[in-house]
Image (cartoon, rainbow, N blue to C red; front, side):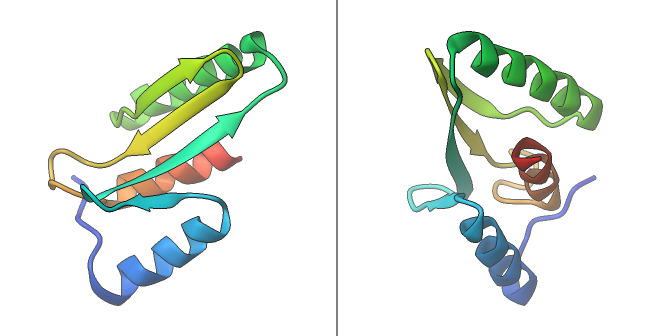
Length: 95
């Protein structure tokens, strides 16, 4: 089970994610990032790889794809906010 990020640990993680382009959504406890690729096929391929990764983690992103862009929102509904699972999935998406 995942745990909600709070306190100093949360601040540190958010700073690290922010340095990699993740932004905090202020209307809910979540992070977001827009990924851009050279083509629709590359974006779709990345989404396919991330879908397999997310399924193995049993943690699924909210995402939206238009042509070469994929907009991602990560939050953990089980804890009603940002958790360690979101951070792990964000790290895999950035890799």
